[in-house]
Length: 193
Image (tube, rainbow, N blue to C red; front, side, top):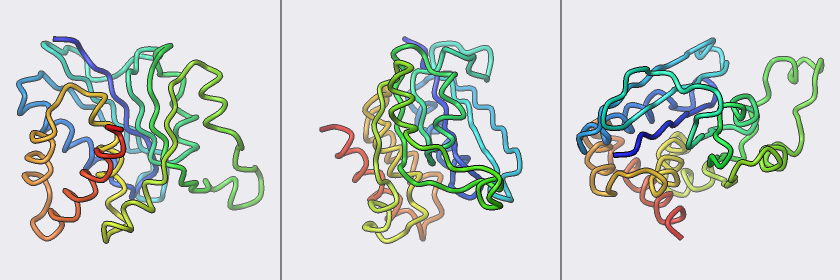
């Protein structure tokens, strides 16, 4: 049983912690040992949020070391760049093309970096850029971006689609379950092509 190192990165309010909970639940259902570590930062104010998720036969440490991340799921472009140093040489990155300006950009003291996906590709990352927000809106809830991104990431992880769907249904409040399942399936179908 291979170990997998996954990082989910974005800004507060994007559902990163919820997505990590779904990932952890799915991995446990398939008998993986799972360790998850969350760094909230200033999450309530739109600050950087990152979750480290490690799964395998036996996992001892919850934090992914720099240069060891198999899969980085970036809910926002700048967060992909912020955490790119954690990727393995052949690591994969799924980037939601959404751009959420941090305070220095909002105040005019800095510019939002351009060409982030190209820069990560130059570093050796396998990059997939998607418009997860448009897909989530098509499913009926823009807050389901996290489930679209998990669906896109699922084919890169050793968990069955049915297990993901069980985990989503188990963790999601009933009134949001249908849209979360639909958003995951949309992402999964796009990621499996």
